[in-house]
Length: 307
Length: 321
Image 1 (cartoon, rainbow over the protein chains, first blue to last red):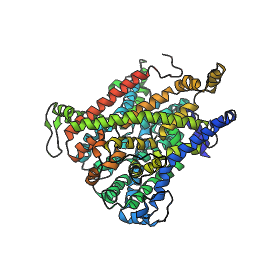
Image 2 (image 1 turned 30 degrees about the vertical axis):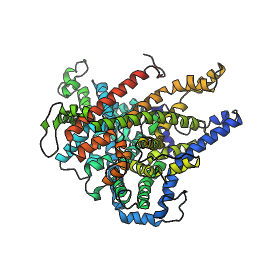
Image 3 (image 1 turned 180 degrees about the horizontal axis):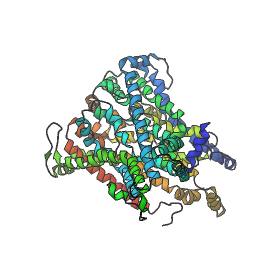
Image 4 (image 1 turned 90 degrees about the vertical axis):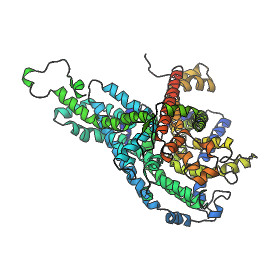
């Protein structure tokens, strides 16, 4: 499987043991601890896990109950009302929003991954005066709060007559992003330089070095960047709030906010619809996590990224 | 720009090759081509907007009419604005509660996880899944979980004989409720700590044990110094993030007149929420820009203080300064 290859490519960067390998050893120590300590440990762990899972369990259970039972005690979907999902589907253009979120998410993630990799290659391969200074500037931009650039950026898109389109939600990503440039550069620096120099001697151009050599070799890191940005885009509410007026252009979080305002406290208290919508917005992220679990965990563990 | 870069190494080019651009020069050209997207993006979406925002903060601007220069008026107004003071106070209060709690609880969970054998992956997923939940859904979910009469949290408190507070309506309890919600999504910090803990060499613990160190002493004198880099990193990142809290709270308490009246949204006004409303609801773009610069200044000062303080306790492996 490719998994082994990917893991070995990830490890040298991190200096962190890849998830999974380091985990077996404490078992031997465990036997030496007194019984009461082990009982306490299991209770604490399982207790914490239950507390973290209960909101999910409640959400799913309540989303499957009839309106008047949403706030009933208990977690089970009794009485069972799967029609809530059909109601939510009819009440709001969830399919449209879901597709919008997918399109915007893929565009945002692909744009930022490709452009950041391209720029990261520039920082990793070439040696030129002022390189470290410039890279320091890249890192410094991570400190800049979104709020400072938010208004002028809005004015730019407004000047280009691109507000109320989805373009501002992803097009800014075409120019790379400091965090991903940093991440991908780290991966590129872990590759042996002779590899690239040999290809140069064989007459490969720089773009060929990038596409044919570097790009496939840093695939695991590219996936890390892609899934992180996809998740960030899927969750984002602020940009759609700023840029989108037309409901048909909404992404799922923006749409979900409308559902809440229309069917929640602001409206007729049809909480079953709101909850079904929340589940629909959450499930794709859970699936994404299980598909790309290793990339999320390694991405966070190696770079300390906030998820 | 290019001229400063392409200056080749002092070795003079061979006489016969003067016609073609030297290798170094060609390489420099390609280097800039690779960096170009970022440089363009930096100028258009970061440096340019920063300058524009600094200028706008000195004006009155409502998008429709051209900006009108007002000097430092916005900043003066800012200092005297009770709403800004309240939003800032709420935000700092939240940060002061959220960051230490996240760090302590995450460290506790990471220490537990470290001792798990085969099932570690499972439990790690359990603690991380809330992070994957879209922030709007988190806001909706906790709005209901925090419900005074029927919410899961007060039901749970009732089981142990506690009469739960009105989390969403009592101004004293709105912020603790928000902090409670924020703790559900601390999974990334757990994973950072777990990775750091697994990086601590075992022989350090063994050496400490031989020296007679008990469990607490090993934790205090081996574990904590060895993961201090991760602690420092999460302190900075979590502080910066919580000073910019927006989505979950906006979902719960704002954006809808009905909701804003029903709840005590004054108690839930965060700085960035207030800034967003000034900019895009009231179109006070100049005033909002001044607010953004004040936020930037606050973030920089707090981060700087944290960096200075942490120089005392962060231990870097292989440090050779």
